[in-house]
Amino acid sequence: MSVETSTLLDGLNVDLAHEYQAIVMYNTYAAAVTGIHRKELQAFFLEEVADEFEHAKFLADKITALGGTPVTSPAEVRFTTDPREMLESVVKAESETVDRYVYRMKQAQEYGDYGLASTLDAMIADETRHKEESEKLLRGQWG
Ligand SMILES: [Fe+2]
Ligand SMILES: [Fe+2]
Image 1: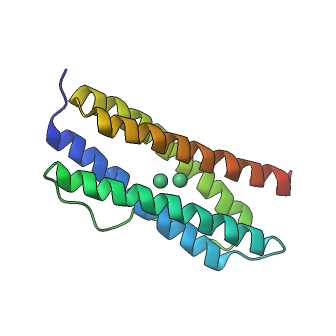
Image 2: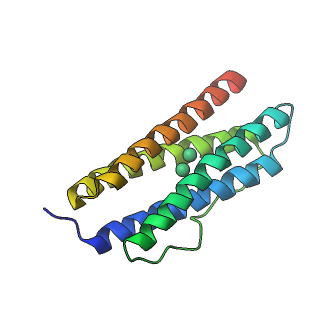
């Protein structure tokens, strides 16, 4: 079964909207986080933004290389000032992103773009690290 360019482009645009979501989420949470752990959580959130921006740059570039139009709006971000809720939202978003990239990597292989598949493989490693770090923060601070 072969993958159409338009199908791959639709998928990559979903991925891009979620990278923009991650950027907005981390930046918003860094600004809004309250409590005794504010400083360390703020630093953690801002550190993640840099990775997500690299991912967004790559995806927008790839979409235009394949002849598509990159989306310009992020997927929705849930606002909260509660650190625990922030970390839970982060773990959920990162887990869903890992699943999305595993699927997209297989799609890229079927499509025959092994360079894309290889970059997605590296992005899976980044998102897995984000997920695991957030899980550890959740565990360490609230049991
Ligand atoms: Fe990302
Ligand atoms: Fe991430």
